[in-house]
Length: 220
View 1 (cartoon, rainbow, N blue to C red):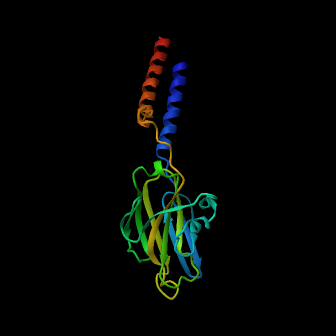
View 2: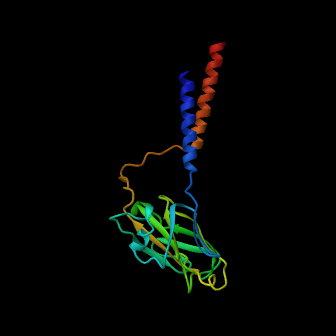
View 3: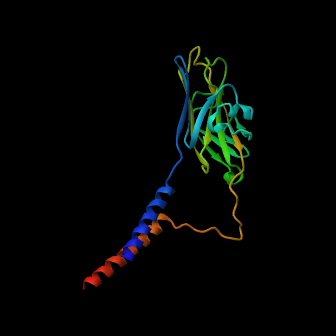
């Protein structure tokens, strides 16, 4: 019974560890609509999203979105502003389809190595503009899921032409940060290693075999 109980414990731990290893952040979309014109921003690894007016230039522009974007006494610091493929000090963006100034974009994003050891919170914004916008929001904002370093984002506007749809081309992408990151462990003390799910399952299989063998000997 003791061996069977140990096997059950190891199997339970292996399954739980395996699921947590493959957990992923949520993909979100934010939409702004006025009449027949719609703008849609998408981001693959976010906890919340919102849309706002104009080009976000200050912490107040992010805080005005409310919810998780309003940190109270803590301000958002502007880190990078990119208007073309490439890298800033912390953020890299590259278009996969579409062009800067266009209205149907898919792209990638990534943060610099060690980002989450330095900062506690981050927001990614995408601004569009260019003339009349028919009372549509001008930027989409995404509260990046902590620990996520890369992924995809998108922007689309429909219709893409006409009096109200003619404006709205992709202008720039921004990164905002707040708070401090996780405390880095003392380098003199190596971190405890967590067994991979495959190792745990292999161990469970071995223990299960021992349990079955012991059962056969007891019957004999």
